Amino acid sequence: MILNDKKVVIIGHRGASKVGPENTLKSFKKAIELGADYIEFDIHKSKDGEIVIMHDSNTLATTGHKGLIRRMTWEELKELDCGEGEKIPTLQEVIDLAKGKIGLQIEIKAKNLANSLVSLLKSENLIESTLISSFLHEELLKIHKIEPNLKVATLEPITTKFSKEWSYLGGIINNAIRYSCHAIHPRYNLVNQKFVDFVHENNLKINIWTVNSRAAMKKFVRMGVDGLITDDILKAKEVLEQI
Image 1: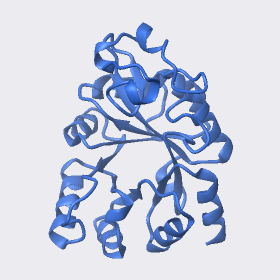
Image 2: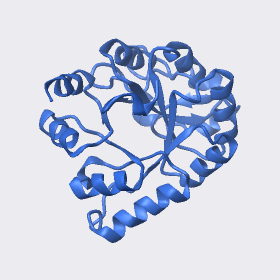
Image 3: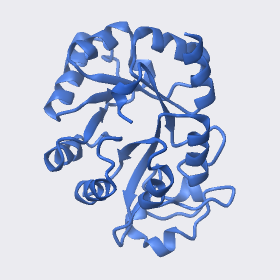
Image 4: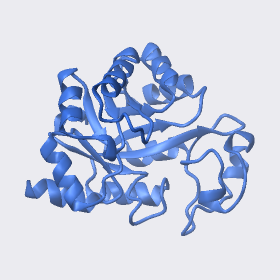
C-alpha cells in the first residue's frame, strides 16, 4: 500500500480513536476492520530502548500514572492501563497486527529514534507501506539519509496568524523540500484552496489533521487534499463514497 494508490486516503488518527482507547491494539484492530488505509500513531523510546506507542512523553494523561517514558523500562510501562484493559503497545506488536493489512503512519515524538526505527521497518519489509511524520524535522532528515526510500512528512505549528500568507506557505514548502519530504501534514484550520494548490505545484502531497465533521471532510476532499487524518474512519469512508 502506497499513498499514491488512491485519490484520497483515510488515515486513522491514533487508530480508530472514536471507538477505542487511542494508540492501543484495540483501536488499531478496529481501524483495520473499518477499512482505513493507514493507522497514525506516535512513538517514544523507553529507558531500555523499546519503541512504544503513546501520544505524550508522560504517561499521565493516558494511564493515570505519572511518569516519563524515557525514564521508565518496558517492564514498568507494560503494566499500565490505557483504558478498557488495554496496555501500551510496542511498535513490534503493532507491526505484527498490521503487516499486510494496513499502512503505517508513524509520528516520531522523540529524538534518537531514527536508526532503530528504520532498522525495524527494513527487517519487516515495511519501507514501502510506511510514512513517517514529525515536528522534529531534523529527525526526518536523519531518516531520509539512512533510507531514502522511506517517505517522510513535516508536521507544522498548529496555529499562526501568518498561516495563509504566501510567505508562510513558502516557508512550509521550503521546509518540506529541505528535509526531502514526500508530504506535509498541516492542521486542517490552516488549509485553504491556495494552500492545497501550492503544495501540489511543488510536487508534494498534503494530508490534513484532524478532520472529523462530514462538512469539513467534503470541503477538503473537493479542494484536492491527498489524505484525511481522522478519528471517525466510518464517516470518512461514507463521505468518499458520496463524492
